[in-house]
Figure 1 (tube, rainbow, N blue to C red):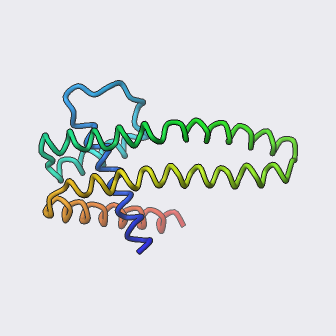
Figure 2: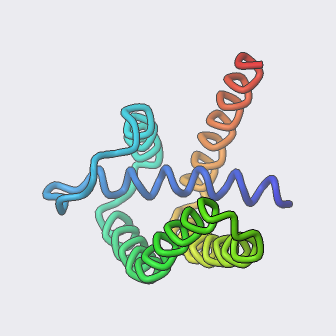
Length: 151
């Protein structure tokens, strides 16, 4: 079940990014993490063939998620900075506390993202869900091949 959730989350994240890439006048956003990710998002969006209404719903869902995660992202950055300082000062108790806090904050962000992906998945038609699952499976297989090739 955990594996299926991870697959769903990966595909949904790619699909969400592609939903934004299909807009006529996108808001200024940071450059994609890599050209590969941008290409994957475009392919997934084309494969799903979202309606204009679905694109708008997806945009709303993911904007809300981003807004919800924004304060947590700021906390994550502060925690990372404090953790780096604790490491340099060799404060083992502080390192433990900050690492635990970092894990909790990351869990909160993951919960927000997974919730948004679940909402997005619900706006898809059964055919689109099937296509999303197929694309997700292909992505997982390619990632696994890359990992095996790197070993």
